[in-house]
Length: 201
Image 1: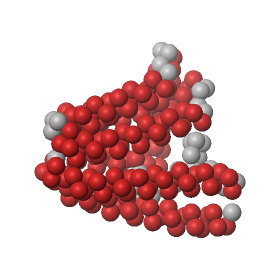
Image 2: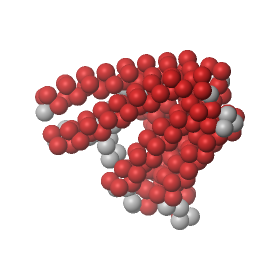
Image 3: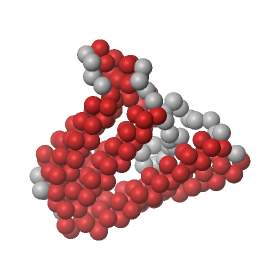
């Protein structure tokens, strides 16, 4: 829900930062890997119940994750493999972080498990829609590798919720339950979109 307006607001800042990093020889794949490594470290910290450290590492991990695309464009290296690597890294980061939270806060394990299930279905619906839309000749909404569709739960909301889960570990279970419901609504939104767009195509 917040990704598109936030992307518009921050696009010029990230593009300038990406151009500066590109001039210094930074490769986009290095940023993708760095973001994933930091996210995995955040998950380990969460599993160890070092929740303030987990929050810091998680937020830090999202910076290189947001810069790999601008760097790729600045270097003229934007392509399908980079888009695939970025999305795969994001899915690994999101899932592993929730697993870390479940280990570090056992009282929230069931809620985290349900949240993971909604992530799985939501991610599958996104990729299935993207592949079907591409095959049906549906015009892509933007220049990214996949046909990303808007919804109630997007990347910005996920970053915020994961941060809240470790900043307020005592409330981790209700936060996870609530976001699982939000992701569930997003799945239904994508089902409705797929039926409308793909049936017409």
